[in-house]
Length: 120
Length: 310
Length: 105
Image 1 (cartoon, rainbow over the protein chains, first blue to last red):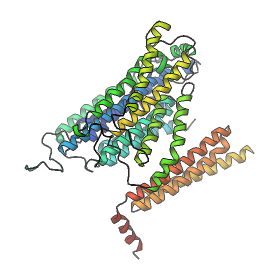
Image 2: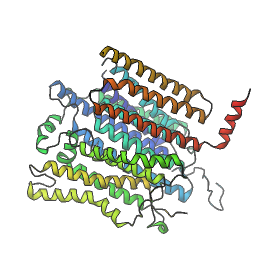
Image 3: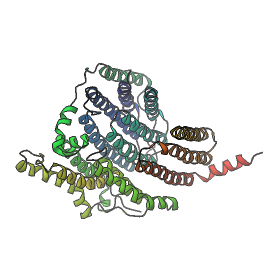
């Protein structure tokens, strides 16, 4: 198996891993991390397609070592992923500031500072 | 090159192991540190996939800036991840589902068509008129300019979204997520010595990006990192969110891009088309102003919503 | 001549890799944060320095060589600063505890 295919399988596994974390982790920060894991898995799939396209060309002697179109898409994707993560983190920190909790669970035990006049 | 398969297999194992660690680690901090390491290892994978431009972006943005952002968040949260979540039965169900998704994707990877379809010959054929030699820069600014335009524009609503999370009374203050560290002489020294080199590297990445790997996003990320370093060392203050000069600089890049794009309707016959013979100077001009705006946007996204200082 | 240079590269890079290995073992085996940091910064600075030194004869141009040296110097600067910051963040209780363990007969 070529290294390129290996990294493609790696990307597929990362998507699955990230999806599991996104669904099963109660903590919002961990959900953000898992979401980024899915993203990087998808980018890796793009990279494999770019490399394969280049490989076919290199065999034909074109002197290009990768399809630049998927590569450019991944670069824009990375920047947008950063912006999305920044918004998600800002939302999370605001949630903690207002409610003192870092999870989306309805019945999760509340963390410090406890809400006044009610037992957590 | 006989080492190459072993290196690839080792990298793949390392990436998967770190991915597992990010999901399974108990403490938030450990997971975030794992994520930064993961980003750096992923940059090596991109080098192995001969995508050096992507490798630089991944190292600077994916590992570096995202890591700072997440570390800052982890420091403001309880150390242990909260308990709860779905029960054991549901977890097994989800795991089966996720393995299914991964297996389907793996099946797609294994059954990709041979020979691989590719736009590379088309790009190679149409690159000379643009005057740039780096095909990725050519695609970003000439062939798929609309993507790049929308993508830089989308950073502005993201920044507005972050700012919108400020408390009412904090509006107009300085962004508050990057608190200066308690004064430390070694950090101050780093923040005094490193930025000249960092700025040089950032400018070089943008300038060289026309012909060699590099470009405005990589350069902007390095510039933003230098800015954040100086702010964290307490050597400079962030501008208030109402600062006019800062706001004009934020929109300067996209505005110049749109203006040149609109001018293209008359000079080259289509929106975002570049007139023949002027393509390279215009691409460099767009890269330079976009670098300024994007660096400012990235830094401000890291700096978070405005907050009243105690 | 080129054989001697190749030999120098192999020896130097191998020695550098050995220092990386030693630093990693220290990171995994040493009892507390300060000693781990000690192992890590020492080994990384020296390991990376030896690897850069070993690669210098192999680069084609002076500019590439200067680039390699710049990488080493920047890594030294960043490593030293991060080491200081991490050591400063160690809670005093932990460093005192390690002191006691160290002085135990």
